[in-house]
Image (cartoon, rainbow, N blue to C red):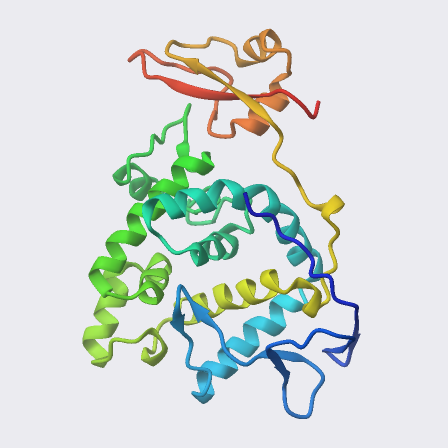
Amino acid sequence: MKKIQILGVTALLVLASGAFIYATSGEKKEKQFKEGTSQYFPTKIDFAGEKAPLQIADVKERFDRELLINANLHSSTILILKRANRAFPVIEPILKQYGVPDDFKYLAVIESSLTNAVSSAGARGVWQFMPDTAKEKGMEVNDGVDERYHLQKSTEAACKYLLKAKEKFGSWTLAAASYNGGMTGVNNKITEQKVTDYYDLLLTDETSRYVFRILALKEIMKNPSLYGFDVSKYELYDNIPTKTIEVDSSITDLATFAKSQGINYKILKIHNPWLRDKKLVNTTKKKYLIEIPTEGY
């Protein structure tokens, strides 16, 4: 499993006038200072192997905007770095299993900051699925069980969507954009504007920024110390070991069930956030897998 590690480079980063001053001894970096400033800016960047054309003025400026914003959202970005150590080892092998590029883990980052977020529109979970879309992708969504909060199952559902979008557009970048703008919405813009590249399209403000936000978080998370984020291994959030209990019947009281497993209700819900009620109604004998931590408490 991959873990985020801080590179062993002697570095000093100081925030001055909105820019980072960087001094290093030894290792040469494949980056450059923006002309006339002391802020790092990558010489090149890609999404899922598809190069972002930074030589185009507006593309460079839009990427610069997201890089500056996220490099200066210090507490939020530090929390993302810490959470990624726990979430990425779950997400990465699923992406690989489905043949979806590893870079899509950064899409999950910008969707939810790797939390079980709830949007004003009703999207939920790390991958921010709306109820109908979640059900279309095979997830159970009701008052008692909401698998949008199940990281493994929601990642699998995201992969199914992205593979379909890639088949439609022929581009991982457009597939990512469609996760925000919808396949129909992006396709309509392609038809109207007679171009087939994300970087050539004039989209809504949110979708126009979407891929650049992914690129910015990818750049920062792969090179955190260059942007002032020196998070030690000790500070990262770890996955807590669990055992799996298979349940194929109703549970009338989850608090009592938790006690029978040597934990409490709070811990049960932390490790199984898809359980949305105080009980589990299961009249169809469906098999549910419940995670019970074996350490950490």
